[in-house]
Image 1 (cartoon, helix red, strand yellow):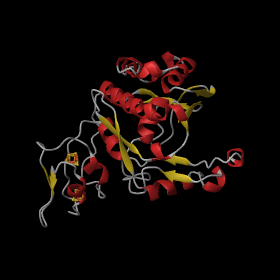
Image 2 (spheres, rainbow, N blue to C red; image 1 turned 30 degrees about the horizontal axis):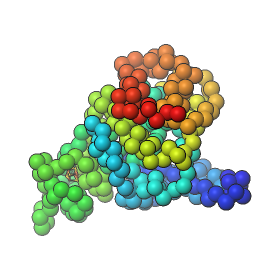
Image 3 (cartoon, protein in one colour; image 1 turned 180 degrees about the horizontal axis):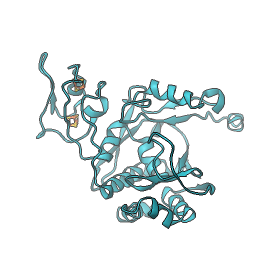
Length: 283
Ligand code: SF4
Ligand code: SF4
């Protein structure tokens, strides 16, 4: 960091807010969680930024034009920053077989609403016991599908609803059910589409590092001690998320990932990237 500062660069480390409750749903909680784990500004020698804002609303929409997503919604830091180093922990994942640079770019930049769209087909399901009738869902709904009249509970017109997930993402009480039930193939396709739309915007100003250490069977967001499925390999650098992930798979071993997640066709990430032309951007 000192070297970067000496060369006139103003580095910072960023994360985005997550869908689920706990220590990272709100930006303030995410910063406190980071500090509890030792990721302080003093230790990192640079600021830590919650890139979609402390309330998760500092977002922009990017054109995508893919079968699942015509647009994708991401943290505004994507456009306001001059360069990125995408640092991804390579590990297993319960819905995509493995998670590497593609998954980190898609979930890491995505707004809460985009995270919901990737995880499942969306429609609001209200839990009245949690709802305070604050009206935020009706205020932010882009189509008027979410409505609240007087002191009544909100209603959601599914004929008008476009499944954008803004209401689920912004409800301060988590009164709208978070849906996790997407098919694993569709989930991977949505990851790839989101990463591709982001990559088109940042490829000229981005380098990638995959950390092939502590390679666990499951995603880092799951609680508890993780089963380690492969010995440490080290760190891998690259200039395209598909090529760095492909090389990471080779180094860790395809059979290692198959053994950890025998029912997931994780190759779908690469195949679908070819189908939508994402692989064409490898130079
Ligand atoms: S944002 Fe949440 S708490 Fe507020 S009215 Fe909508 S569902 Fe209820
Ligand atoms: S998912 Fe989007 S369109 Fe549907 S009710 Fe919620 S905010 Fe409105």
